Amino acid sequence: MGEVAQIFLADGRPFRDIAADIVRLAGGQVREAYVRADRVPVELVEGPAGTFCAVEPNIFSNPPGPPPEEHAVFDGYPAMVEFWQPNKDYDRLAEVARRVFDALTHAPGAQPALLAWDLGDALAAFLPAEGVHEFPDGTATTAEDRHLWEPWAAPRA
Image (cartoon, rainbow, N blue to C red; front, side, top):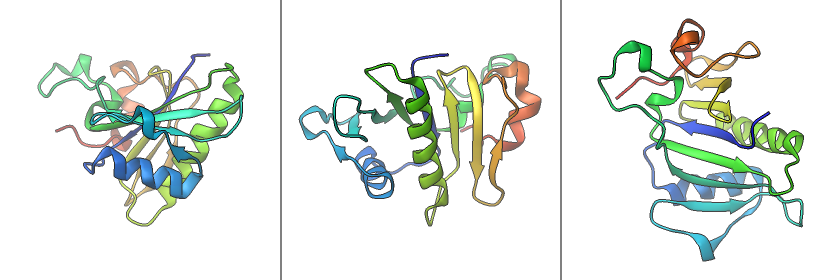
């Protein structure tokens, strides 16, 4: 199992606004001392076993125009929320990331979203007109499983 989870969002709003939604919908607080223009960290669970996330640009997206064999499910999402758990409680990490994904995708005005594990496994996707889709276990985020994720992925820019 990997060490991080991601929610990719097709949301062009400022990262601080997305972080505010996470705090409002899932609880926690923005870690003001660590905010930068391109990264807004949020502490989701208080105490030494806390789970953290940061809203930041999706730096893993392929630029427009690569050949189809290089496409990844997360290419159409400009924003990413990356989750980590310092105590390496990966079950808790997965639980918290899923809770935030569910909160964001059930909120009014929800934008397309993708829940992934360690960039390698696509877990679930949300499209406003379709709702949430759960991917089969082991669905790769890469072109090898494109037939599974393409109908549920946000359109590429």
